[in-house]
Structure formats: structure tokens, C-alpha cells
Image (cartoon, rainbow, N blue to C red):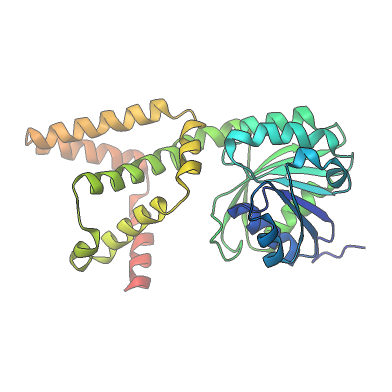
Length: 297
């Protein structure tokens, strides 16, 4: 019988050879689960050996016996194939099991899981707001969208909580609306920053000695984003309905640039004050970043 500190169930991670798939495969194994990773990648066997878990180098749709024998199926695949994978896997799951995903968008995979999984299959959408380099769940944000809630959903949420995750419950629609800015705009701005450095042929390494810790942090954040999988980040942009967000950003850039070109200090200052007023508690943001700078220095 499972005790409160273990998750001794059978877990299949579809896409388990990928970055987040590996992370969750390790996480569940460390908490007592019998893990099988299913992936088409040539790295599947090597990853499974490193993690000391079972594996199938195959399309998940072609191993229905494994899916039927599994208690929890976690789908960790690229956004552009997630619906097809869910469509193939979900109908094979038996009542009393749990189907969940870790996709960066939520409306489309949630609709697919609820549509293709039988009524007795629990459905849980998650979006871990961290990458595969995270050492643990301690202090990390995990967004959770309830589909068909039940005993296994509660167990997995409690497992995340016990490891220190901050769970935020929302709807798929509210998630995707917020992510248009939280991810869509942020990534777009930071990637544009990196592309501008390239266009200017700006020597980042040579400029480092001239930077204060604050600017080092900003440049490191740009570098962190540029270090990520460009295909994944492109898919996030193209699946979050961000066109109007991009247009607003470009319009603001042109307006700020016109203030500078026209030496309109009043217009620039008014625009900055208006942004600060809308942002809210800028003093708290200053204090938090001061603490970060202090830790670095």
C-alpha cells in the first residue's frame, strides 16, 4: 500500500527523452514510481539507462498494452504534436487512471484530453513554470488546470506541494490569456534584444567590465532565453495568439523612439510615469531586485 511519502504507481512519460520528460521521469522515480519512458528519439535508450527506468523507443500510439497497464500517463511532447499524441493515447487508458500534460499552452491539450479520454479517466493539465535545469520543485511555480478531478489528481498535486512547489490553480482560458504576456511578450522582447545586439555587432564579452550587477543580470537573462530550444520558443509564440501583443509592443517602441528623436523629454517622462502607475508596486520590485543584486555582489 502506498504511504504518504511515495508515489508507488506505474507512470508512463510520453516524450520522456526530452528535457522536461527527463525531469519528470526522474522526479517520479525518486518518489517511488515505476517509470517507463516512451519516445521516438534515438536518445531514448541512453536516457532510460541514465535514469535507470524502462523504455520503449516507439510512438506511444503503437504501444497500447503499456498505456492500458499504466496508472498515470504524462504527455511531454512539443506543442505542435500534443493533440495527435493525446488523440492516440487517451482512448487506450482505463477508468481510474490519470492523464496529464506539461504543455506551455493549456486550452488545446485540455480540450483534447477531455474529448478523447473515457469518462472514468482523470484529466489534469499542468504548466511547470521552470525548465529542465531546475534542481527541484522548491519555490517553483506549477500552474494547474483541473479537468476531471479525482484521487490521483489530488495525490499528484500533494506530491508537488510536498516538494515545495507553489501551485496556482486556474482555467485553461485564463492561463493562455495571461501567458500571452508572461511568456509571449517576455520572450519576444528578450529575443528581440538579442537580435538587436547581433544587428549592432555589439561585443557582449568586451562590455562586461563596464556593467553594473543590474546590467549583468539583464544580459544574463537575455542569454538564458537565447540558450533555450528555439523551436520550442517559436512554437510558444505561434500558439498563444500574440499578434496583437506584438503589435502593441512595436507601437510603443515607435512612440518612445519618436520622443527621443524629437528630444521630447516631457513626452518620454509622461509615458514612463504612466507605465509605472499601471505597473503598480514598483518600490517592491526595486527592493526585490536590490536583494538579488546584493546576493550577487
